[in-house]
Image (cartoon, rainbow, N blue to C red; front, side, top):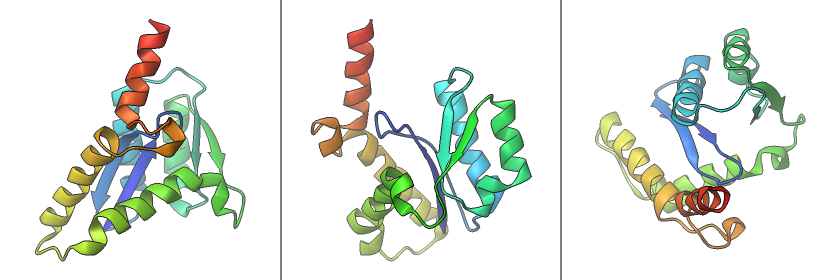
Length: 145
């Protein structure tokens, strides 16, 4: 099972995601589309990813162009460039998925969805002043209102 996510780097919120039994471009595109329709970003948004072939593909680059996003990719062999996303995947493995044996793919997908709800709405982040991603984002919008 593979998971693709789109994270809002400011709030650490997972704003787009997709789960499937492959790691092809279509999986990553599905996560990007979800994020785009949920947040409706302004043109010129910087989209950062690792150097996976899915993100470098023609199909994905064309989708970014259509959405008027600028592409940024990690430097070769440097996991620190994408560390918030790497940290998310460590968290989901060590806080949830590694402790379960799933009877079906559907059960595994539900566990991912449950973890995403926990991660965005209940998991505290030291980077955010020990707030959840949702609370941090809500405080931001209250400040600028």
